[in-house]
Image (cartoon, helix red, strand yellow):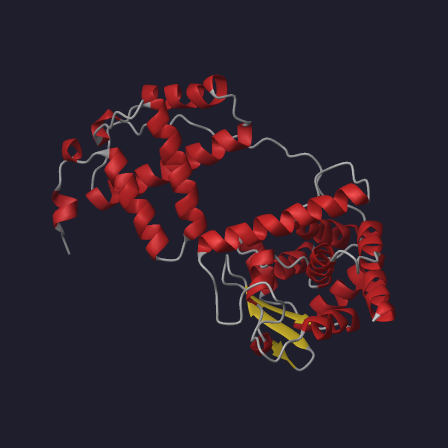
Length: 316
């Protein structure tokens, strides 16, 4: 069906206000992370333009080149940051022209090639998680909670903080932890180990449906509040890393990346690792995942977390 929006001329479509609409739509659809990225990219583009809006026809290859130079040279942003904002701006432009039914003679981003910068090694060794699980932090309850969340995340195949926060009693089916990745929707089933059970029992509360006291009992908080909770968690992990004298910043992402790296070093098939992490971006991986026995995932997880799981169980 043809709408009034698709009948507008490119000269009538102004980028700033249209980007704001796209951000609002993503936010309304619950895609807050995408909305945040669109907002950041839009803000940088506004700064580049000194607040001067332009119509769709004004988006040209030379303008895109100028924006890249502005980010790289003028603002001295890192390569991967420039890539993120550039990809976001390109995505928004493509959405706009698709909904408008407009095909530009020269696509302003056609000449742009994204070359991600290889990030520094973020994974830590298994001994780090053994040290964290053995820490005595009774006098520092906030830090102890972060250490326990970090340990559970590792034991649960590097579970992301957002999924950890949303776990409820309904996610426990016998001796299996069942949930869907918040980011991708991928179903995950992990065997509940003795160490995991100890941590679950430690924070079990009859007054809350959640397995860990991250969210209030009455229900999920706003996305902005969630980001503050994630920031607080990462600040605590940074303190743990400093206490253990780790050479690099210790974050929730490092926990997840470390599980995958350790699993790979223990010769766990990449397809199983992808399944554990809930990745869905690789067609080949998805093809193999469909043929894997779920019990293999629990076996692979025990190979990775065995010593840490035992330490948690013994201290309980």
